[in-house]
Amino acid sequence: MMAVTPDHVDLAPLAAALSEGALVLDAERMDKYRRDRALDPAAGTPLAVVRATCTADVQAAVRFAAEHGIGVVPRGAGTGLSGGATAQDGCLVVSTERMTAIEIDPTTRIAVVEPGALNVAVKQAAAQHELWYPPDPSSYEICSIGGNVATNAGGLCCVKYGVTSDYVLGLTVVLADGTAVDLGGPRLKDVAGLSLTKLFVGSEGTLGIVTRVVLRLVPALQAPSTLVATFGSLDAATAAVLDLTRRLRPSMLEFMDRTSINAVEDLTRMGLDRSAEAMLVMQSDEPGARAAEEIAEMAKICDGHGAAEVFHTDDPEEGAAFVAARRMVIPAMEPRGSLLLEDVGVPLPQLGALVRGIERIAAEHDVLIAVVAHAGDGNTHPLVVFDPADADQAARASAAYGAVMDLGIALGGTITGEHGVGRLKRPWLGDYLGPDVLALNQRVKNALDPQGILNPGAVFEHH
Image (cartoon, rainbow, N blue to C red):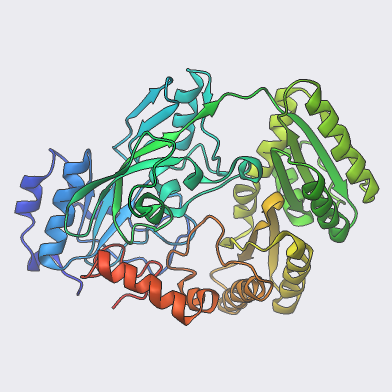
């Protein structure tokens, strides 16, 4: 497959097969479709952008691409953090941003959702029926369900409620030849045939393009109680996390290091303790008196690990403010420089070793690394900060980025817990999977996409 230009391919048949106004050829309009939030400097210039309005539009785009040997880069809201939606020279970018329909069936507790619908919109639609959609990435207000499915996104509540794949019951997927298949459906139990629905969740657009999702919903919960604890040492905070998860099942257990705390305090002026080495944000959504009991047990555990301060609130707005502070870490760090965003996850007993190791890596490479984490499940988000105009600093940041992933692998962890491999983490995939499993992944990819046109260069080497 080679890059093509408008001079070498007639786009008129594609335009005729698409909905009115779906094809974008203007260079200025296409520019915003070249990168996701990873801001990959290697982003190319697409041949065209297809702003699909329905499954048929996606099928037409993929069929055209297959006929001409053109790469297809699927794109949702563009909030991805691993370069999974980075455009390639001469590709077709297929955007699902206009596909936003949401239907709620309160009887079966499902939502039938198009991929462009935002996560927050699904939550709001479910709430009208006293239902809840649990997966909640920090970017839930701006990320799309299609992107969540592509990366199997998690979020702050996944410590208790699981990740996207736990709520996907069915999919409509456009395959590499343009065929649309319906997988799964509105059934809670279904073991007929291979588990193909699960195969496509987390496949990052490399096996097919999702155009419809059937999501499982749960009954709405009561407002949670919130506990915030600060610690004078990283070791005390990570030890508290292990103790908390061994004894309890909090609905949220988040970690912020000193750099993250200070960045958020610079932005919000909400009175966070700038001297703390770490802060834990915890919640309990247990019913009735059980929530108070669980919060009291959390406080006791934190006190037992030498917490400098333990604060509890049952006020929903006050609790939401602390959760918002945790969600705000990435935008709070962005004014300090460009970010290389990590997504390393380790078994919980290795959380302390990972956090300490990242601290050493930052010192060794003389770069700033902030660490936030979904501590309850060992999924950390180290943020490597650098000035792209400083070539030496950029090189040190890149080396530190790789060193963190190497450390995660060495500790029995993964290079990505929820952001996806994309293009930025692909060089480390082989080290993580090993040659046999990597080859098995490639065999699946080759079977479903023999031309290699689906999201070329993402996850797998582009040949």
